[in-house]
Length: 493
Image (cartoon, rainbow, N blue to C red; front, side, top):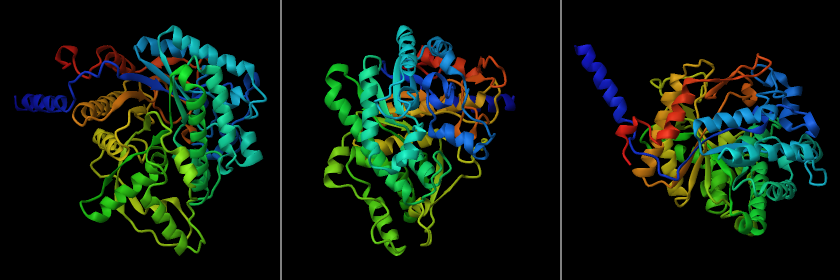
């Protein structure tokens, strides 16, 4: 009897942690993926090589299982099957990306690949015919390799005009198909990991220098695309354009002021570096001061963080119609003053990132199921950026276990969606949509095919590359149908 009572108490306690409110009537629920990770057909029908094609082909040792995305989920041929899954789940929207290399193989608008254009036209028609809203990302890391070789990619300030031309082409070509646009996905990963640490394509190692140059050029590229839409397409197409910011919540490691300051540094370097210029104008002040001080001590004649001109600050400020957020987990942040020496993005932050021993680990060192971190993050964004409309454009559970009985993924989704409801109803955060990553397993960049995030399992060893339903797909379908996280008869309007 005591065991039974204890079981009941635990069950009730868990249930009470889940918000019983229904999602607002117009709240968007959807799933996401990206071209490189699912399409395959890497050189088919005129598509050119991207920096990630080049990276995986030439440096397989940098990929966990030495794989590549040549075939991936074969969505280039199986997109109708993918759309059917989304339709069957009853979801509102699908976040996908256009491969720059598939529509403009040279990266420039004087060489249009009609086969690539038709592919995306077909995808958009399939979505439209099934009542699914496309949320379209212009750049999900797949820069044409030729632009990297000819001009250095995002290290060259002329990338802003080239990206603007590409964006205009997409707005002209697909403007009737899509109203929700994302310019660039996760700029921190593009710049700090791709052009600083060198772990991601294009593999440039210029830590604490090149990553900041990339950040400035990338923000100018984003702003160029936003202004093109605003001036040339908004009146006709009535869409919205945003840039994605991504990050883990940085919880102060203690109540002392040094750890609280470390938490703020981690957030402003990780998120504010891209969010602040767009929503408030200019780099975050503490980022500017800190990089300038450390640069001087390191013997630089000027800050490693390139300054914006007054004109550029004005040009970038206000260039996001909503805040697109990718968030997966939370880490603790403690002050850890780094010695002066080699330039380093992490040393500029000087915050030790760590996990509490009681947190349940997964297959990824940085990943923990802590939904309270999302709620805190949403409130920080609300307060820091003047309560913008927020769409969560990625959130999901990662593991190296490809089981179909993925109860841990269900637990994660339930908790994080409950945190969303808490933020909406208790904290008055202007959150209008949630996008789960992912509809299906995919090629996870340097994780290859060894990390699983899909609500549908992909059997990559089967030549037919079947989509196999996991338990979480059924759970998410029920959420979409009921618009609630608990039994329908117990939901609160």
